[in-house]
Image (tube, rainbow, N blue to C red; front, side, top):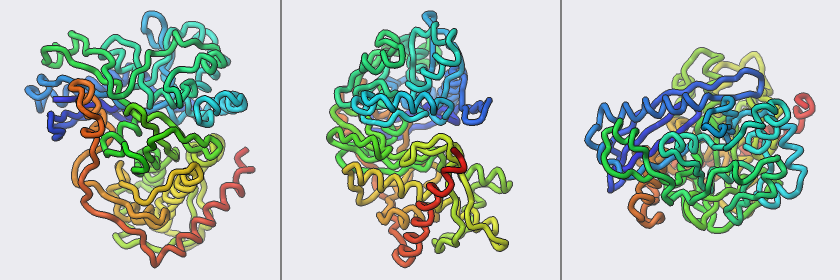
Length: 484
């Protein structure tokens, strides 16, 4: 058996698979986000451990014999989080999360240093780890002085699981300290933020062994014998391993808390000025590009909170048949935007409201706004040299056929639906655990799921969608001056 642990923003998911990659079971532990100030987003690392224990306990209750047979564990996690620990492994402050934008001033200062884009292949975004450390040094110097290690969220879980300080390439590429082409820490970039390589974890590939499960935890979980812990992956690269998106130009769209358009690359193709992320993949000698929007299902959940109707009820009111855009446009910039704007200050908006603008009209605009934001990502990826002819949809938002039809029509490409099953980050992490424990060929393991169906673009609405997208594109420059 092989265990995947995926540390998300809202919870930890534990998944067991067998040697044939059949899912045996899964369980969850819940997490909350603390937002003490506007633009801030934090979590206590101890809560990650508690949620992981909850999730594994849930598996043990249902599948004790299968859990006892685990030989490999893979880790996946939310990226970019700054988890700061001292020499005694004590957490120094709450982790600053991926969607925290407080360090936009520090990010701009680092991005102005040409070495960062040249070596990392990326803009220094406020959500990345390096500017957060610059913010801590400036605003919390006593904390900064005590830092012995900077760990990404899933690698803090690894420390709890194994006692080792280890990370891997895909997650580390989102720190602004990795030489992404060389797949190694850059001592030059670390020095630019007054840190050293000694304060970083060791690096392995996501498919490699990266520690063994501590005997105390193995005993607690009912496991005997050595259990290998794989390097693992950042959440999007782990999802790509779960989806089999590991060969050149294979692509998926993820509708989770954030939205991601992800394409695998056989070579390193940076184009930072497009705000496309160019990261290492979890597999050796493989990279990927992705565009990221900060609010996907988060935008629908916000709308749900305001209207007092569940997300499922809201999308259900739209029916199954895609409608032409109404003229009401939604900008989903609730906490700023990454691709293509790199703007931490911009905020969301409804434009074009009138007396007749019902709840259904607003729901339609929210779904279209996210679809158009993903279209922005597609245009950015194309400008960086990656062509996408179709995508596979994953994430909670992909349960809405209406939303997928909107995305297919906005992108102008078919959207494939995987056969029933969970092919997300926890499954990808379990696959990496299998590879690390057995030495199996990563390409042979990370195969795509069977396609259960395809949602084609609605050609009769293509022109209307194109007009609506042009309106959407015109609105960001129009409202930018109001936010800045």
